[in-house]
Image (cartoon, rainbow, N blue to C red; front, side, top):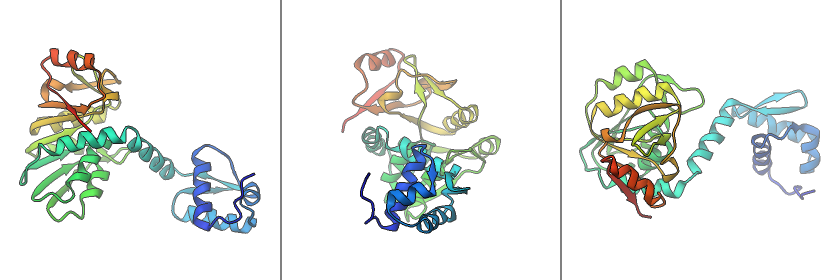
Length: 261
């Protein structure tokens, strides 16, 4: 049994979060024994987590809320291939000049790009991503336009007919978007039909589009085709992409940029 008597309240609550996200049952009596505290102390911990919207109390324990599961899932997706995504974002930012109008699509790679733009001067950024908007909201040199639309359950992004209609109002210099998969014939894939239509509209209102996707997406497919790399200026991926995959894409006339770390 681990020694947890010296754990502070915030450390106990973090252990409770970890147990919930690992699918372990949360029972007050067991937690009290594990942490060597009273059941009343555990109840106070669970009350704090419930007040913050992370758990829902049950008889004798607690279960995670949708918000907690969403935040964990988003953090896990963002951390996956994080180094590659940062390298791709660093390459993408070299295509941007002050005074330009941009669209940053949903996705964890475009979010890494947004992190690099925070101190950029004189940009206008249009986005359907709540996460991107949150990163840029206090940037003095950036005017951020958050598109309206249907908040996709379980995702920090806006989709649907409202988003599509609003996009038709804009004309931008560059769009940066991701993909759930990129076929070796250059086709772009997504798993959600609402996302597919928004991605098509994004490309239609941009003078240039760059697709940002780490090498794990190359050669993969998903439920829906929403376009082709032929509609984009280039694919920016990381150096781990296989030579044969690059060769197959380039045979279709697609420009492939390998971002070096």
